[in-house]
Length: 247
Image (cartoon, rainbow, N blue to C red):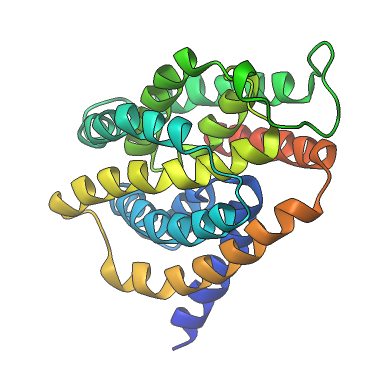
């Protein structure tokens, strides 16, 4: 019983972070599960199963607040889904140490670029449809899909900074759109891992309720936090993830 309660509290904390930043929280779920003795491949698959459910609840809150750009989300999903499946199968064949180093370097770069203001950018950004770079969205989707399936982390840690910096989407819309697109990506990767026997159903069922509650609270808080503080918080989060990848 105590184990189930701890899983719930784990999900609650991670869900809060996930909803606030539009990510899935897999970067915290995977290392935590492995620390408790769960094999790496099972931790990855279970993490993705949890992310699938929690991202749906977070996305629902962002949809209600009208922070989801559906064209961007569906275009992202169209490319992230097949790449997530490919990444899931590749996770059993690729040297994980090399991947972690490359991924950590990328995250550190993203953290730097995320806090570097673009020329003419204001702290509180309004949505301007004509400034969105839709041609860059397929690349973002493909890259986040591979990362999700391969490492068990949410594609959101790629989607949010890339949506903001490459596709020129205002931060709060980037967070909301990422949450919506993340559901489709994680669902494809989770199902693939499930068919490979790499999902622990008991852990999924005990962690997920906390993830749902936490993600709803986090998604609500997005509208209460200034964009500039959200940027700094997300950049710090990326640095923490990068360091975890290297340790």
